[in-house]
Length: 305
Image 1 (spheres, helix red, strand yellow):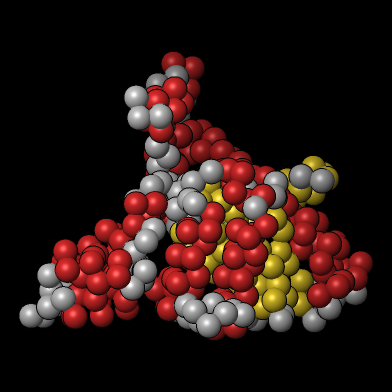
Image 2 (cartoon, rainbow, N blue to C red; image 1 turned 180 degrees about the vertical axis):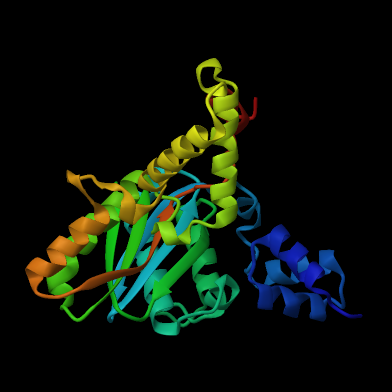
């Protein structure tokens, strides 16, 4: 019987076990899903099956430079205090080190890599952590920069992880403070774009449409000539750049200059030039729907009432 990717995905969702192990179990079970689950249980791989279905929206975002390579990862867990667990934070750092060593193409590739410092894969190490900590734990995403100089920043013990990537002839030590300042700005304001050049025409057209509609609904503005309205819109689009584009934003530490001006002034003082090539911001749990439960009901469930 042919094993499809859909079958493998279904078994993964049922057991929380890695893709390759699921495929092997399905092959051994000749496509029988229940038998495949049994095989995984017998191998001890699906011992954390029940926990794997629970929502993991807490955890930790972590950024670091490892052997010259910038890495940022997010690993989720079920409760916010797990980030203070030394075993959990060590696991997160190990995931980052595995990314740095292997440069995986995607999450599946990362999970199949040998976990740094161990004889098991990242998937197997994750399953081990579920058993040790007693919560569902999931490596959610990662990114890395292997060119230029990267500067990491971790906010509030892992609530937000930011990685800034710079192109410069200056040394990492020279630009570290600047990179940290830019990373802190990204953590605080979460800009939609790095630079106004990244804003698409479609985005500008949509913004313009909204602004014109607002004026049409304002009795004082509706009667103004179209040329005047266009001028007002142009001015407001300038404000849009300042609010949504990192380099055009007011620098948080000194509102008299933009981030772009701050970087240029600092680079000049250091005797060189610095270009912001890219930046990644991970906020733990963003986009994950958290399950809301009544605390009293949860206690009652645990007590079997």
